[in-house]
Each structure stands twice: as structure tokens, then as C-alpha cells.
Image 1 (cartoon, rainbow, N blue to C red):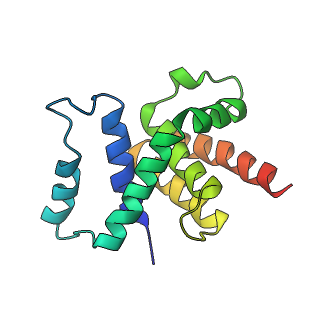
Image 2: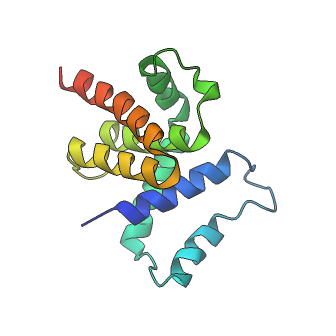
Length: 141
């Protein structure tokens, strides 16, 4: 089963969290879920749970994931990275390092590249692929 839509929603929520505090009136994660329902692609409870696993795990381990990204993104300051690219890499690292279910590394990498192409650019996709590819090779050693 494809988890693409769950990853998209998790990315949208994480991106929103970059700009809004949890008690901010504009902070409305429910709107993201409602938007999905309006598109007739409502998430089942199981699929919503996967999305929330991603959001909660990335949120709880954000500093650790950023350290990994910073160590692999040669000559890039983590603070200067685009929020979308950074969150795509956080999601992928989350799935590789703290999997809720077994997902092949190649699938996680492919999904991250697809999200980068969809939400950023082909240059961003190459950057994301390079950073995550380096991590996956290090993990295998």
C-alpha cells in the first residue's frame, strides 16, 4: 500500500509547525485533514495514524534528525536549509531510523525524492537524494 498521501499530509503539518505555535489561532492541523476529505481522499483511521506517527516522531526527534542532516549536508548550515526540504529529509530519516512498519529503504528514498520534486524542485530532489542516500549507505555499513 502506498503511503504517499500520509507523507504529504505529514509534510504539510510539519511545515505549518515551522511558523505557528500550537496555541496559535492560525495553527489548524485539522484543516489539513479536512482539505484531504474535501478532495475525496479522506484518510482511514489507520492511514491517519501513520501520518500522526510521522508527525509525532519527527516532532519528538527533530533535534536528532537535524544533527544527522547537518552532518551529511556538506557545506550547508542546517538553519539555512529550506523548511520543506528539511522536513522531507526529517520524514525520510524518521522512517528509516524509527520505522512503524517495515518499509524498504529504496521506497523511503524514492518517496522523499518524489515529495521534493512535487513541493520543491528537481535541484532540491537531487540534494535530498544525496543526503538521504549517504545516510542509507552509512546505515548499511
